[in-house]
Length: 169
Image 1 (tube, rainbow, N blue to C red):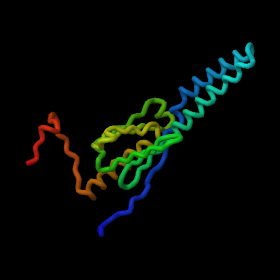
Image 2 (image 1 turned 180 degrees about the horizontal axis):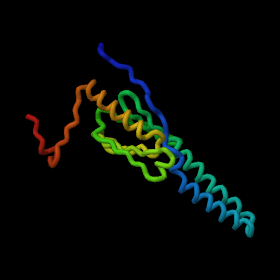
Image 3 (image 1 turned 90 degrees about the horizontal axis):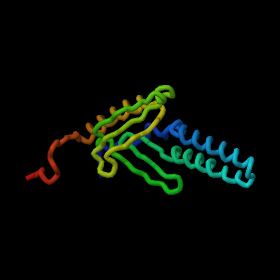
């Protein structure tokens, strides 16, 4: 029987902002206008309007279906529109975080968080354009330290050494 087990709780859950789609949505609007103008001369061509509309729907769902969840023990990333993939990174494996805020992100209150981890399947993770990104990063930083203390784990970097050169004997 395990003692001192803590129950994992979800602390933050969300997806990237649709502001990431501003460029693709604008391009689709221009394409739809061009198709509409062409349809004035060739009315059956109006059926091609389904292409930019389908593209906009796909882009919207692509952003919406990538969900990030921060729990008390891990970061969970769920991706996929039809089929889903769930990837998890234990918090104690987070080595470093960076916050990026381009000018348009600052105007819209968004931030992108870049995580460097020691996780083999996901050494780098970008959480793009999320609202409240600065608060998310601070909460993440605090939780990483709490989880490292709880598991009694510390991150150690070994520079200029390959895995073969390290001998534990």
